[in-house]
Amino acid sequence: MTGSTDDRAAPVENARPANAARGVPESPRPLPTVWLTALALFAAAAIAGLVALGNWQVERRAWKLGLIAQVAERVHAAPVAAPAPAQWAGLTRANAEYRRVRASGTFLDDRQTLVQAVTEQGGGYWVMTPLRLADGSTVLVNRGFVAEPFRARVAPAGSGTSEVVGLLRMSEPGNGLLRHNDAARDQWFSRDVAAIAARRGLDGNQVAPYFIDAAAVPPPAGADPQAWPVGGLTVTAFSNNHLGYALTWYGLALMVAAAAAYVGREEYRKRRGVRRASGPAPHDPGA
Image 1 (tube, rainbow, N blue to C red):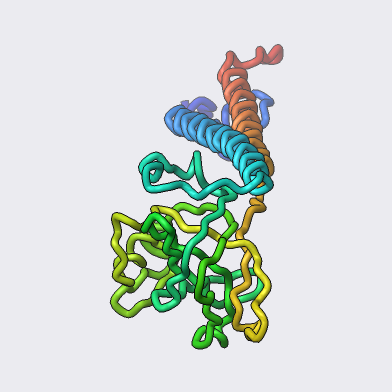
Image 2: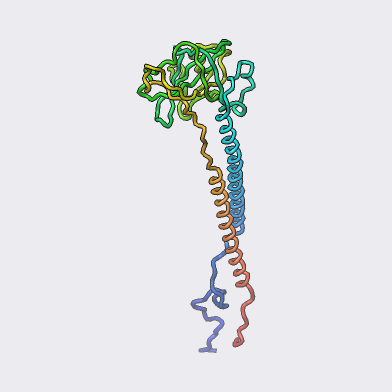
């Protein structure tokens, strides 16, 4: 029929989303399941790793406290005879380092070695001088520290028999922290007993695998005080910041856990909103 209008065929302009048509506001879309799973796995791995680092610092703290107590006990004990050749094979850092020992012998000033060092007095050198004992064995003695300007005129230990009291230190084989020992050029950055002994022509079988950090000794009459090695500078106080490090790692683990919980809660809300929005449309009484 001419002039009739087919309302069903008329185009619908400005069509609104289904949710808006139902009176439900648009909400953020949830993350894809694969993404959410990946985030959950990453968070779990991060938390496990951070907790493991915290536990490691707790273990390190226990070790450091034991070391501090052990060193404090040893450095304040009465000195004992330095280990003889028959005891050398059984020496380790755990059972020997920082023990107070004494030894008597003759210093070999002509075989002295300077090892670069940085101390509370600045940059300079440890003065390592062999001490020949009565039994024919040799122990390297760190007589002390001299500043850089006095390296060329270090005061000699002197002739005759000398007694040394100090702390037993195990050899430092290899190199310094940032630089390599160069025996050919006589440049030393660590107190490597075997390498120094070989460079000085000492019988390696007769050289102790340790050296002695000598206690402070006043310079003899007539010696230049500034050129006399300053002993007693062994570091026996150790920093112990492991508890702070552990708390930091545990705190980071809690932060990751809190962030993961927040994301999980938000994703749950988004998914619940989607389920509600996808339900049956409300009934229109005027239809």
